[in-house]
Length: 560
Image (cartoon, rainbow, N blue to C red; front, side, top):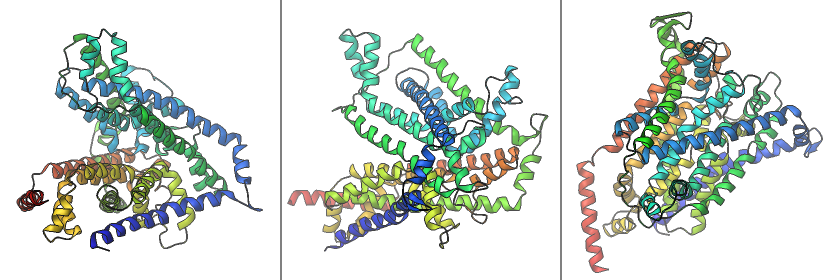
């Protein structure tokens, strides 16, 4: 066995064993727990839950509001992506709109509910500006607005990126052929994106169906499955049998989602060439989209503007006088420094270890000569990881790691985060590695370098931009997540999102917004840092190495 084969097999088995132990085993144990009854093993727990009117109502509520929200979000995301690609609205306006849309991704979902309360409640900012409360904030309508704001950014990213791979010159061809405006729109914009539209719908549905942060803050009497799972597991009278069944039930939409995505892949178009397209001016079209952009931006600003106001006034809404006392009071809490350090540390280690794990898995898939089954297994791991909701993962970890040295440690938080966010960074780096020159490793061997040395000297530097994106993705998501770690964090390992959950219990909403701003600015700084790192020019030493490899490749081509 040569060294390259040994190192790649080590990566393969390391990834497989890690996921078998930390994902497969906990989920298998969760399934076993759901079948345990006082009389032994059987379907008794399922029978009890499936005939429980409260659970059925909560599950139905989750399904209805998630489906409605996903439909609205997908339409809005498509219109935003279409307008940004196919209008002549000034580029500066488009850039500002994208920044506004992306802002919620730097905040924990539990903050969204509090923002809606303080914006649209009876004493909210928007209510005071318009003179009346626009809708009841607790329950269905509050959840719907919050879910749309929560899921619109990721759904928009899916469709916005998909538009890059559409040949827009077909619009001209369609018009020349005499097609109606509606048919041109369908054949050149909607039909090529059916797969991506379904992906955006499923992503939005899945995010809202499994989210815990928003309904726990604004759900009111509108019961949903995620909150019911939390109450069963962490309530005054825990019911672990029912909790395990609810957790298994929450996996059903995930499995169906994967099957739908697989089916919709057949509708994706493949263009041989993407031609440049000059968008024609249209005052009517650009004006209409300009108003639409303004409406979406106004919605986001209306929801989140209050977050930048409450920490800087004495007492909202009764004493709206500028002061820094609130921030000073919250930040003077000695325990907060430890909590913030915990969050940044967990996010940082998650980013580094998660990126290494994803890179190893992607190398096995994209740049190895291992058999096809090894590569398929890497993709299957990513697919399975993507289908497990964070709350289900947290519950599974509780059952299997309680009483072990991992319980209530930083290690278990980091492991949960890596598993929870593994899929997207893996797909990012897999795509990047697959596009690189396939002969680099061979050239490295001819130069006397080992496979690992070639990876370090050449492959990693060439994928630096993607690595920075992976680090950024892991860090930001680890800072804002709550669904899995709400079950796993202890008093010593508390992070900011679980601290916000604690402050909500004591109704200290001004402190909630201060901590939310702390997360927001931390993520903005981290994202900016990683983006700058990705855009840096190559270091001189790397340039020399790359030129040397290029010369060797040319020599190799002449003699082979």
